[in-house]
Image (cartoon, rainbow, N blue to C red; front, side, top):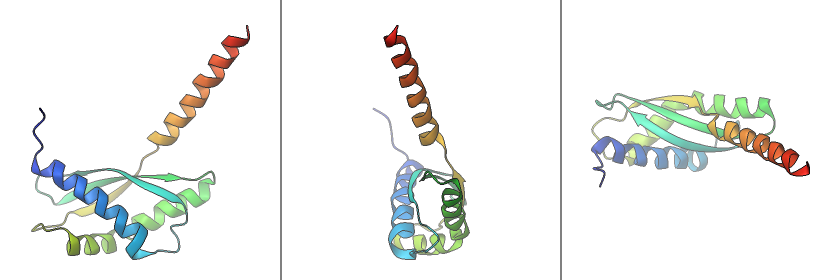
Length: 121
């Protein structure tokens, strides 16, 4: 059985709360596309956290604008996070765009088209 340490527990809480803050409390009009907080990795001393965000959109400009708006709100998100998380320090948030979901979808479509091509022969 895997032992869950404090950082893992906090990462899960940060992930959930950051999503709630962005989607419900901040209401930034620039966040127009659907997004997900895929994971949060905090440093051991809780001074920094990498927040991996996936933005779902067919329009690349809207996708980038939504991510940029989230990234620009990092200080506001950290402030709101400090209100709901019971920790001595709330880490500085660093947002990263995670394309793994889009990449996986692209690869699945590619494999499906290859498989369909083999079935025709």
